[in-house]
Amino acid sequence: MARTRHDRTDPEGADTTDRRMRSSLRHQVLTSIDIPAPPDRVWHHLTAFDAYPAWNPFITDASGVLRVGDRLQVRLHPPGGRPQSFRPRVTVVEPGAVLAWQGRIGGPWLFAGDHRFALTPIAEGTRLDHGETFTGLLVPLLRRSLDGPTRDGFEAMNRALADRAGADAS
Image 1: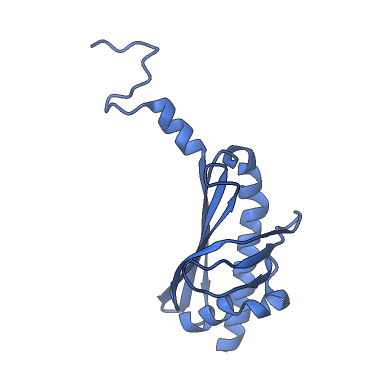
Image 2 (image 1 turned 45 degrees about the vertical axis):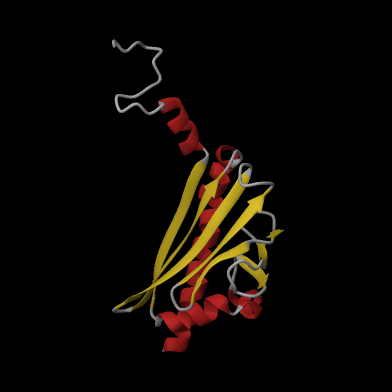
C-alpha cells in the first residue's frame, strides 16, 4: 500500500498523532545531588517532616504517616511562586532507599504527579535522585512552570538536604 501525506501511521503501525499527544501530556523533572552522608542519615532528614520548616525551602511543611496508601499533608513553596497545599498518597516506602507519593488535581486525566526520592549509596556518601513525572491534560499548560520554579524548588531542597545531612556526617 502506498503511503500518502495524510496517512498518520508510521512504518511500524503506530498512530503518530496519538503518540505525539501522549508525549505532550507527560513531562519529567529529574534532579540529582551527591550528599556527603550515608543513606540512613539522609533518610532520617528526608523523613523527619516536623523539621522541614527549619531547613526545607521547597516543601515548607509536611505531615502524615509514611505508609503505602496513606495520605500526607504537604505544603510547597516554589521559588518565585505561590505556596500550595495538597494531600498526596504514599506509593513507595523503602527505608533508606526510596520514598514516593502521587498527588493529583482533579482526576489523573487532569493532572497527576508521581514524586520520587531515591537514595543510592556511593563511595562519597549518597546520591539523591529527586524527581517527578507529571501526566494529564494540564501538563502542556504547566510545562514552563515545571521546568522553572518546580525544578528550582527541587534543586534548592536537594542542596538544603545535602547541607543538613552533610553537617551531621562531619
